[in-house]
Structure formats: C-alpha cells, structure tokens
Amino acid sequence: MAQLTSIADPAIRFRALFENTPELILYQNEASIILDANPAFLALVEKPKEEVLHHNYADFLPPDVQPIFQEKLREAFTGHTVRFEVYTAQGKSAPRHWDVVKVPLIEQGKVIGVHMVARDITEKAQAQEEIFVQNRDLQQFTYIVAHNLRAPLASALGLVDLLGTEEPGSAYFEETRTYLEASLHQLDLVLRDMNTILSVRDKLGLAESEAVPLAEVAHQVVQNLREVLAQCGGTVRIDIPADLRVGANRAYLYSIFFNLLSNAIKYRADERPLHVAITATGGGAQETAIVAADNGSGFDQELAGDDVFKLYKRFHIDRPGRGVGLYLIKTHVESMGGRITVHSKVGEGTRFSILLP
Amino acid sequence: MDTILIDDDPTSIFLTTRLLKREGQPADTVKSFRSPVDAVAFFRKQAPTGSLPHVVLLDLNMPLLSGWEVLEALKPLEVSLLGKSAFYILTSSLALADMARAKGYPLVAGVLHKPLDRAEIQTIQARVQETMPS
Image (cartoon, rainbow over all chains, first blue to last red; front, side, top):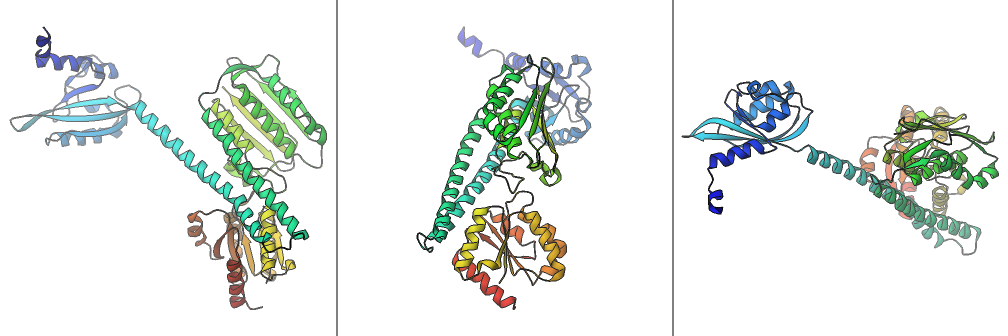
C-alpha cells in the first residue's frame, strides 16, 4: 500500500498541490492571458474562475506594476526562469509584498506557456524593515553615547595633564582637581544614563498594561517632589478626574510625570514663583489627553526645532541638565502607543500635550 | 594674541584657559562665551570696528546653536573676519565627518580635538605670529 501512494499519478499529485497551496499559481500565454488559476489566486482577487480565465493578468494589477510583470513574462518566454519581488495589490486585495517566480513550460525546444508562482512575504518584509530601523537607531544611539562619553573624558585627560604642571597645594591645583572630579562624575552619569535608556528600550513592546488611576500617579509624583517644590516656592494643581484610568504601564506614567515636573522645576522662571497645571481628560474608549503647562522660562522653539526630544540635546546654557529627561518621556509615551507634542515661549512657559490610546 | 573661546562647558573653558596660560598667554587676553548666541552677537558688533580676536576656539556641541550654526550665522561677516580672526573648531568628537565639513567654511583654519596639547597651542601661536602681525 505504501508503495502505491508513492507512485500515485503525478498529474493527481501536482493538481493537489495546485489546488491546496497558499501560493498563487497562474498559467499564462505570451499575451499575458490567464489560462489557469489556482484557488489561492481566485480567493485573493475574490472572483469566480470564469471571470479570471481568458482575461489578461494585467487587468488584476495596478498600472504602476504592469510593466514589470510584462517585462518578466517576456523574459520567461525566452526560456529563462525569472524571480523578482514586488509590492502590489491584486484585484481588490490590500497591497502585499510578493516573491514571484515565473517558470517557462518548454515543449520541443519551444516555450509554450509560463507558470507564475507568487508567495506572500509581507510579514518577512515587515520584519526586515523593523530590523533595519532598529539597527539604524542603535547606530545613532552608539554614536551619541560615544560622543557624550568622549566629552568628559577629554576634559579629564586635559585636567590630568594640567595637574602635572600646577604647583601642588596652590589654588589652581585645587581648582583643577575639583574640575577633574566633576568630569569623572559626569563620565559616570553618562554610563548610568546608558543603563537607564537600554533598560527602557529592552522593555519596548513588553510594557505591562494595567488600568492605572492617573490622578493617583500624578499625586504620588508631586508628593515625592514636595521638598524641592517647597524650596523653590512652586505649586502644582492637578485636575484629573479621580476615576480616570488609563490602560498603560504604571512605571512609565510615573516616569513621565516625574520628568515633566522635574523639568518644570529646573527651568522655572526666576522672576515669578513656579506654577504647574496638570490636567487630563478622556479615558474609557476615548484617547486620554494629558496636558502639563508651566509658567517657567520656556525655550526658543524655532531654535530648538526637531531636537527637543532628542537624546543629549540641551536648550539652556545656564541650567544644569544632560538632555535625557525629555528623551525618556518620549520613549515611554511611544512605547505605550501614544504621542507627545510641546509648545513653548521664552519668558512665558512650556506646555506638553500627551495623547495616550 | 587675543583669543575667544566659545564653549558651553565651564570645565572646558577653565581647562583651555589654563592650557593657554601655560604656553605663555596672559589670562586677560582670553575671553569666553558660554552662549553661542552671545558670541554671534559679539562678532556682529565687533566686525565693523575691526577690533577682533586673533584666534577663536569654537566648540561644536552646544545648546541653542551648534558650532556649525555659529559659522553659518557668521557667514555674512566673512569678509571682515577673514585675515583677522582664525577660527579653530575645538571638539571632543572624533568624527571624521567634521574635518570634511569644516572645509566648507573659509573662516575655519583647522579642526582640533579636545584636550588641546602643547604642540597644538604652539602651532596656533606660531601661525598667528606669521600671518597676523600686530
């Protein structure tokens, strides 16, 4: 019996393959007319067989890809198997990435028709694109980190060189040593930043979602910053409905409020006491809109351009800061599928708007 | 020889000033701008008077304006600055692209990497003595 199966009629075997494979299979003549089409193709273009057979394959393709299919068909009719990738819709289907092979059928040295087999590689193509983007981001990240490690290191090298010639015990010697200490501390901070950022990136896509009560998290952050706030005479008004819950990662939300509020404190205006208003609306089926507005020193949005949320980009000369906070906020917001925008005016204040799905 | 440092990092300004001092340059001939915006304003004011520094050491990575943006802002003043002030880019970055990019700015006499060393300072001093007698 086993032998019987193995020598089943080849015609039956190939017909079964033709009927059941998920790949699209067409048989075409030189004029591109479809002489046979398998169920996978009929299902994709959502047409019965009689509306497909004896029609030109071009009828099922958008104009922009018709020339390439035409050209490859011509090539196959010269007796060569051709293979190419194309991104296209077929019939009324959504556009997909296709790996297409056209195989000539040769009888007595003459090509009498061409089989086309098209495999859907959309998921593979998307995964490749994702890897490409991730690779590019990582390269950029490495470049930024390398640069920001070199800056304090170069200072330390120069200061050590100076120490060799300053009079030990002199005021300059002590000052040089203090700067050296600060540079090494800075170097350490950059490495710590790297750890923080890498751990955030690691969790991308895995962010544990729960129904987080937003007001509670905001109040918790204010509570934890109350000493700093009291020192600078700052006040925070939180206007978030107590029952507003967001399907989000609690730690991320905490980090977002913490960094927003720390920034507001750091960049407050000297001439007036800091006031920050945090409001949120939406929730449930709607998007949640969070707005944090302060009356701080603001920044020149035209000068800052697209750099506001970039790693290690800074916009103030006279305030400390490494350019990490807003980068983290944006990373957190985006990992929860949200987006963030900012409006700022020098001398008036800054308003961050966050939309979470 | 008058020198202007444009660098947002106070450590860097302290260091470069002391290194220049060690090579014999009096501290009162070194002026610094931590804000690139203020530095551009200074050059706009000084260019018509002709009273300009011999050497400018320009950092690249700064808030508000990068070193490149400073050079762009100074382009309209190029005629009055050329031959008077030699600009050197002084950066901690080792990116090779900086060298190529610097070639696009006639004002830039060279790209130096932090920290400055004795030989580099002496080379700058010798060059200024040669090309800018005063």
